[in-house]
Image 1: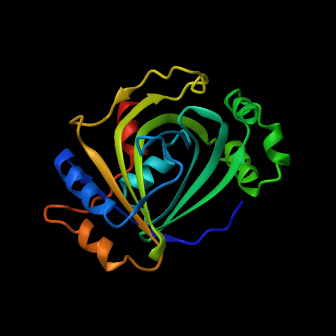
Image 2 (image 1 turned 135 degrees about the vertical axis):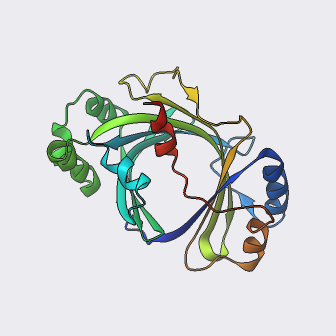
Length: 229
């Protein structure tokens, strides 16, 4: 598990016309993430964990400044690479810890067979095991969305447009080919702009994302998707 630093994370709700303007301006100074498909996007699916008291959800809604949540994530429905992530928030800063797990390990987890986790070489997997045992942490909801990412080297800036945010209640067959889910957006064209950076945000990027009418907001895909169950 790689030890990572805290980063700044800003989120904005935008419409389609704002997206077009921002994308055109960002493309002039940023490069596309090399891991995207030919259209410059990729599909993200994440299963989020919470306990029976909805601790992670309540902490987000109540604005608790120090909180964490676990999720298992994979991309483009490709199960050859599955990653367990722990996202830590601390007074507006964000850090992610991660560990790769196999498809078979993931399936064992869905079945409630956790023995492999307590002897796993990753400390993060062992931490999730302890919290599933003693805090009754469980998979709660599947969140899916399409991401369009851009990168700027100075400041380690990563800007993403997230759209088509969809959800389904967690079920053990989420790794199968077909996932039946529902749209969570009030309007189909709604998107989330995320801006992540290390110590500073370069002026050229700041000038683009501070366009007129753009307002920062505290948005959580997990919280939005939990409205449906």
